[in-house]
Image (tube, rainbow, N blue to C red):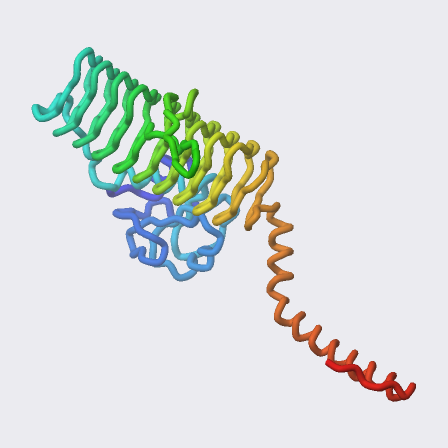
Length: 354
């Protein structure tokens, strides 16, 4: 890349403060950046680094207008703007030529769209439908009668079981299993009998699913992942879960069966949600939170059991004072004992046995 600050600002629809003709030849983090490189600030804790960065240009929020050595490019969303710049300067994206590798196994009555790439050792069972422009990676398994939309990218070693429906422009990273059996058993006289899981999984458009995620099929109906949902690595989504549009699920989250998650929800890392409850639209579940009851819309809950954040923080503040309070109670007990002793002596009473 060899662009001026002004040219970069035009790409990201930003406003330049400082020199517009400075030539930019690379990108880097704000701590590591050198002269000739551009960086960005999205988190407030990095703002002090503006004074020390060696970068020639910095993409910043609109409220930063400091006079520093580097040129500033003010934008609405620095992370998104920097991502656009990365596409200009990063390595060429990997592309796959259309075609079916000779080692792939294709079942009967499979419908394959235009410009599809099916990589080595993929297995596509009978009755599968795959839309135009999809890429099916090496060693992917696609079960009977599953439908995959257009322009999907299925990375190697993904398993998509039978009768699953996947929308357009979905990305699924390696090691993920879609449509595995839900965890359902009936226990009779100490013996666990498997309950058939005959439902399915439906995934909307523009969903991205990280590595080693498991999304179980429903017992009867549908496990549903709404359009625009983004799921991080190592997430477990149980049978009959419903996740609304544009929700974000961060790594190592576990969602139990028949839970309903609203739209635009954020579920932070390692949170756990029990089954048969509802999480309202626009809510935030804090990291490691244990959600044991319904969460209303537009609230932020943390802790275990999960409470509204302000309440959980207050309880945590109290708990940090426990050692101090215990010592205080001990001192008060000693004072009470001394007072009781004096009272008994005044009235000539015998001291009580401890």
